[in-house]
Length: 169
Image (cartoon, rainbow, N blue to C red; front, side):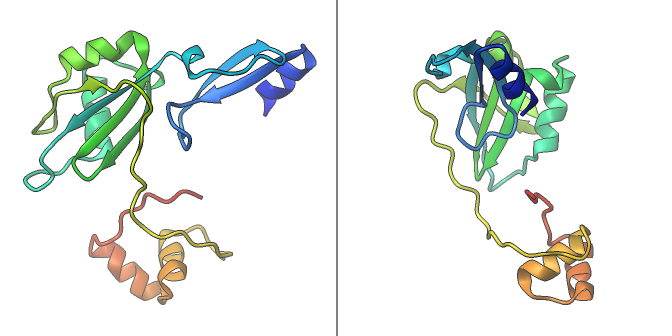
């Protein structure tokens, strides 16, 4: 909002892009007022890799740790999406070749990243969407509301490791 306001005050436009429509990490671009934004203005590359999810698991944290081990900083890496056996990684163009050549595993999972050309179709995550007013931003309150459980029942599910806390609020 602040960047858009600054752009407006100076007769310019401001746009953001993260490689796909719902991206959380995005790059901003100032451009002349009235000029159409193109994805080519944003130096982003989508890398893709597959792994066998039947025999191993991989988390966002595993991937982020592997990137940091290569000496990369978080600001050069955009969204990391893991859907079933597919990994989609959005990175700044300057490091895409380095990752494709250097990153061959995360944890004990072998990987091989290759750039995706053209439009990227990210599969929708599995789950439910709900809207509610909560008395507390505690995970047990969110789970209890979403699944119509008591907070103690929700707490038991959390303690049993049956809750994945990837919640977008």
